[in-house]
Image (cartoon, rainbow, N blue to C red; front, top):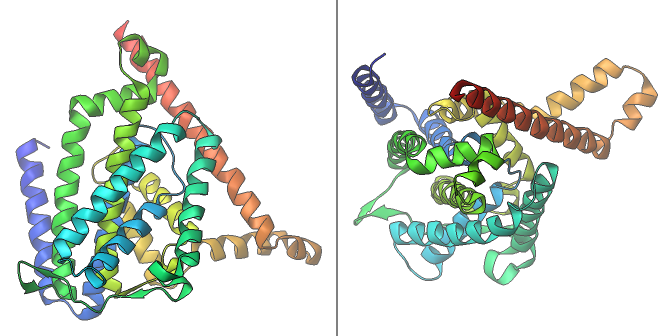
Length: 332
C-alpha cells in the first residue's frame, strides 16, 4: 500500500468515525471518547515502550496529575479549558523529565519498580492532600469546558478526541522516522553501539519519557471533563498495566497498534469484564482444590502478576537485543 493510499484510507476512516460520533447516541459517544483518550495515552506509552524499549508501570500517575491540574486551574483559578490543559501538559512534562533522569539509570525490573513507586506516590498524595485534591472524595468539575467561548459538550469532546488521536498517530509516525526516533530505536536495540556513535542514552530516553508523559497529561485533561468528577480511585494501578498490555496487544512500535489496543481494552471494559478478576477466577477454577483456593488470595495474585510483568520485561529486552544483533549482522 502506497503512502497516498494509506493517507486516503486514514482520512476516510477519520471521516467515518467523526460522522458516526456526530449522530450516535450518548452511550456510543461516551464510548468513542473513552477509546480515544485511552488511545492517546497508549500512543504516548508506545513512544516509551515501542521506540525507547523502556517499560513503565506507573504512567497512570502522569494522567492523574494532568487531570487534577486541569480541574484545579479551571475550578479554583478560573482558567479556560485550553490554558488549563496546556499548563497540565507542561507541568507533567517537567515532572516526567525529572523522574526520567534517575529512573533511566536502572534497567529491567528495577525500572518497573521505580515507576510503580511513582504511581503509588501520586495516588497517596491525592488521597492525603485533602485541602487541594479533596482527598478520597475527589473533585467535581462544575465549570463546563469551552474552546474560544464555545461550550464543549460530551459529543464535542468525543469529536475533539478522535481528531487528536488522528494527529497523534501522524506525529508518532513522523517521530519514528525522525532522527530522534532512530536514536531511540538504536538505544533500544544496542546500548554499546549507540554509545560508540556518540548518542547520549539518558538524553534520548529522557526525551521519550517527556513525550510519553505529555501524552498522558493530555489524556487526563480529556478524562476530567468527560467524567465530570475525578478522585484517586479514577486512576488505579491496574490501569497502568492495562495501558501497557494495550500497547503490546496492538503492537509496540507500530503507529496504529495503540489505537487497536485501546479499542480492544475499552471494549472488554465496557462489557463489565475485569481482566484481573477473570484471570484470578480462571486460575482458581484450574486449581480446583479448596486449599489452593484459600491460598490464591489477593496478595498471592499480586505476586504472580508481578512475576509475569518481570518475565515480560526480560522477554522484551531479549527480543530487542536479538533485533539489534540481526541488524548488526545485516550491516556486516
